[in-house]
Each structure stands twice: as structure tokens, then as C-alpha cells.
Amino acid sequence: MIDFTRRDMIAAAGGIAALALPGATACARADSRTLGYAVVGLGGYGLGRIVPEFANCAHSRLTGLVSGDRAKAERVAAEHGVPTRNIYDYANFDSIADNPNIDIVYVCLPNSMHAEYTIRAAKAGKHVMCEKPMAISSAECEAMIAACKAADRKLMIGYRCHFEATNLEAMRRARAGEIGTPRYFRSEHGFVQGDPTKWRLKKALAGGGSLMDIGIYALNAARYMTGEEPIAVYAHEQTDRSDPRFHEVEDMIEFQLEFPSGVIGSCMSMYSANQSHILLMGDKGRIELEPATGYSGHRLWVGRGRETEITPPPGPGKTQWAGQLDHLVQCIVEDREPIVSGTEGLRDLRIIEAIYRSAKERARVGLA
Ligand code: NAD
View (cartoon, rainbow, N blue to C red):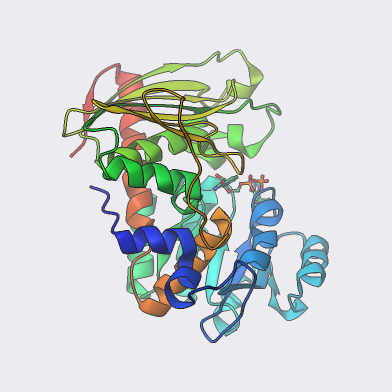
């Protein structure tokens, strides 16, 4: 059961600013509780999305960079005020242990590298933010959790939707019983993959296809919208293996989730169509989001159909990324578990493994 207390909801929406700095705005505001992040992997997400977001944080600073491309790292360091002595590569990464300006390592690498860099960061005494999917197997997730526990470091997974205002409002209304008793959940998530040479289409680097990358949003949403953990899955895969993009990984995979209350979840993950949609139906109404989990433009309707569009209440103005980054700092400062800890990532990976097994065996697979 995903347990969201009101405090967690407020913390997720506003991070430290909402809890400890009443009236604080979204603008950067350093104080003694500011911690330093090193971003590992300066690719589309690490450089394109995460690095610029430190400007929107109240308690997180960019203090380090880890990249295989020194020239790129130096350019990014100059642009963002990171001292060149805080630039590392993959070979000397472990010496980050000696750098007191780096408190947290943010792993933005291909999926198969998440476990290695999380474990190395923990051994270097750093807290870890790791991108989704947490790893490419549940065994790796367990090793990551154990390494962080042994080093007494926090581990959080980059499930940014738990910090996004529209998704938070949808969760709040579902928990408040606004649609009565939930009965059926539906979600389709996908985008069109183009270049067959990308790491996302290589099994060894990605761990799987659309499910690992984008279908995981449907799965995670099924859990946070219902507030329940599935007890069984049934999946069906549809992939054109003659398509050069899909020689190694799946395109479409459809999966049903059975929940203890009797709610049925029906999800579709795709690498051949664009979609981001969530729908929770109850006996008194429905909650719908579309686009549901993207970077911007989220829309939410609550009622019998799409008659009533909901605007989430104005928060402190933080973006989902700033909320996420500051939340981990808050958890470190207050010594508490992130709302999306390693355990959350592990749960998704266990279900993903069951989905793949179900699709392969064409059978219902129970979850312990
Ligand atoms: P990307 O391909 O744009 O960047 C990957 C980075 O890893 C590059 O800097 C690349 O140089 C580096 N790298 C190091 N070793 C590599 C190797 N062997 N092969 C390929 N690249 C290597 O990928 P991305 O889109 O930035 O994704 C990185 C991670 O972030 C993935 O785990 C992905 O699932 C996650 N992600 C999350 C979101 C989100 O919304 N939370 C969005 C996009 C990506």
C-alpha cells in the first residue's frame, strides 16, 4: 500500500520551502540546509532537464559533474558555476569520496548503469538520486538498497510525477473519495522511437523496451492513483521483430493488474505511438489526466466526464524537478525516507519482471 500522509503530499508539492520557509517563493534561496549535487551523465535528461533545474531549487545546488566528455563537462561547469576541480569522469568517479562539496550523486545514465553508479556513490559516502527505471532487475535494486543502507545514505528514485501538481491533485481527490469507490484504472503511455542505434533499443543497456522506459509511468500511476499494490498481472506483447528498432526489445506490451480491493488496472506501453493518459473510474465518477505525466501541459478532469476541468491549487511555484531535488535534501536534513525511495523503485521492477514473464508464458502471474 502506498501511504501518502498529508505531510508527504505537502512536502512533495513544496519541498522544504513549503514546510520550513512559509511564504518562500520558488526562486533559489540558499541557507545552511542547502546540499550539493553531482550529476552523472550529461545527456538529454541530465543536461537537458536536471542541470537547469537547480536554478529553481531552494535547497539544492549543482556542485559537481561526472562525464566521459571533459570538454562538454568544462563548458557546462563554466555555464553553471561549478569549479573544474569538481569535474569527474567514469574512471576517477570514486575519488568523489574526498569532495565535501558533493553530498548527493544524481545518476542520469542508461538503465544498465544505474546499479553500478548508485553502489559506487554510496560506497563513496554520497546520498543517491537515481533515475527511473531504478535498474534492469529486482536483484540489482536489492543490491542498491543494501549498499545505501550499509553506507547509511538515502536513496531516492527520480519519479518526478510524485512532485507534479496535477498528479498530486489527482491523487488527493482519489484518496478523498471524490469518485466514490475506485473500480477500474486505465493508462496508456508511449512515444515513437526513431533511431534504432539508440541505447534505449539495446537490451543490454536498457534492460527492456517501452515498458522499462515509458510504460513504467502507467504502472507507477496505477499504484499511486489506486493507493494499492497489485496482486497479479496478465500481459500480452505485440512487437514487429522485423522492424530494425525492435530486434532486441519490445514495442507494445499491454498488461492487466489485479488489486486486492477488486480494482482492475489496464495499461498499455508503446514505442510506436505517442500517448500520456491516466483514467481512474469509481462508482461515483472519474478522474482523468491527459497529458498525464509529461514535462508540461498537464490537464485534469474530475466528474462524470470531461465537463469539469480542475486547476491544481497554486503551490509555492516549484517545478516537479525542483520539488524532487529539494525533497531529497529535506529527507537527508530531517533523516527520513524519501516518498519515492529505493523500495518504490524495487516494487516497480518486481512487477515489471512479472509482466515480462506473463507475456512470455502467456499466463497470469501472481505477485507475492
Ligand atoms: P541520453 O542517451 O540522452 O544520455 C545518456 C548519458 O549517458 C549520455 O551523457 C551518455 O554519454 C552517457 N553514457 C555513459 N555511458 C554510456 C553508454 N555506455 N551508452 C550510452 N550512453 C552512455 O539518455 P537520457 O534520456 O538522458 O536518459 C538517461 C536516464 O534518464 C535513463 O535512465 C532514462 O530512463 C532517464 N530519463 C528519465 C526521464 C524522466 O522524465 N524522469 C526522462 C528521460 C530520461
